[in-house]
Image 1 (cartoon, rainbow, N blue to C red):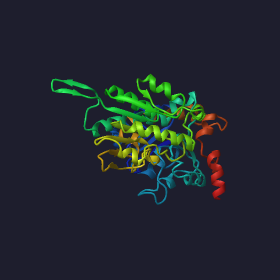
Image 2 (spheres, rainbow, N blue to C red):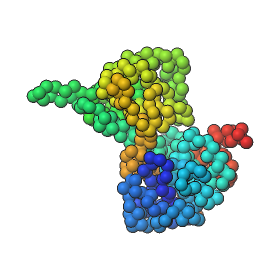
Image 3 (cartoon, rainbow, N blue to C red):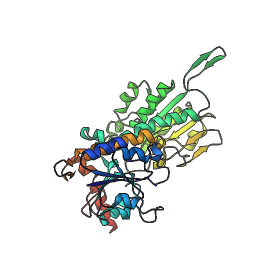
Image 4 (cartoon, rainbow, N blue to C red):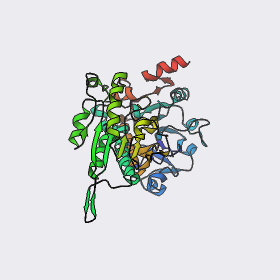
Length: 389
């Protein structure tokens, strides 16, 4: 069976879905691997390294996808009219497509996969269970995003992170406040602490309080009966009530104006990011302060974030709203993402038949499978597709 690795063509995407390390292991499963020329350039992987690992280097998407039974990608393949190349139409009917397909961004993609007979698996929908941890692309990529956010904050910030005592005087440490203590937030806390900053953090989920403290940061938050049930079974934060948001806003207003750096990571699955930092809060911050909004792809946690842009407010606060934060550290992000996909495929690989066997009754398969045999099978999208029809 042939597995194709596509070159990513969506704006700002430098990652790749396979590395020479994973190519060798995929070939070990009995697969023939075709990598589109230039697929690894953004992640500093030349075509020669893929060829040395045993991959065929295909000159274009059509050549890579010809006869492919499996397709690996980082983000959803370009469809008709989305870019210079229509990758989606070149995927053979019956092929298994595995990647972060951004289905919440454009649910219409699910219908397109079904119409083309593509068996699509959206890895961002992977259930948060122990058995799936090594396949969890959201966690692996968020971990790196949290790290990168602090590094970019340090570059933007005009003072130092650690306290420095010199003959000329003492430099005070930076005060860093992290909003959201999921994977990205916890890594941001740890990185800021390693750089010597004073760190505090907030999250609505009850388990986050101890996790924040375990990393040496101070917990800041509204604690009510509502917060005791503020986490979904999958480990994501729930949308909170209007009363909670009011009380949280009051606390945030007092906390934010004392900070030098804010790292915003709060997300709710499948929804627009909650607006936690208002324009009034930003106006109360000190000149030279920095806001790094990892949630920019989902609209941002800050009311003044402009996705994809760096904004400097009239009072001198810098807001970094770059898109695709994992893509800003592409070498490490590609290595982890490629291993996630390899682990997923290996877990459902029939070694005798030398082909994937995604059992419909398996909890992981039920979580990620969007389409199968020309039909939409994921419950969250099957209803929407039927309603649209």
